Image (cartoon, rainbow, N blue to C red; front, side, top):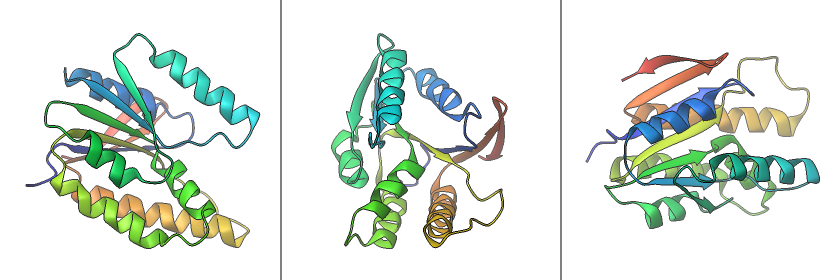
Length: 174
């Protein structure tokens, strides 16, 4: 089975990518699952997470939180009659990097390999972080490199890819 139902939505911070992705999901007319990867490492992040939950409340979303085992969560939710929004891949990469002993490259490759087998419509949201200057420290450079490689792997398998800037989507594939 091909990944005809997988979509990747990229953009910068506050670009409108999540809002656009949510619209793609709602337009499917299928039951909506929101797979959140973010972790609340501080009060500001806790507030952001709570705001996002409130914004989705009453709009048919069922929220699932999974900061590490994204493949397992997708397998668990995978049904042809639903839409899954994964928000976001860069937070997932951050979580993997913070976990000691993770085979991060294997985790990223496993997600890309899973796409063709998914029956659900899955919309992945991620921050494009490779458009700016080269980061000044090793961890930030590794993060940018991991995210960039993941985006390339997902884009290669996804049926559609969008880049969102200033709330405007540019269809890049599909």
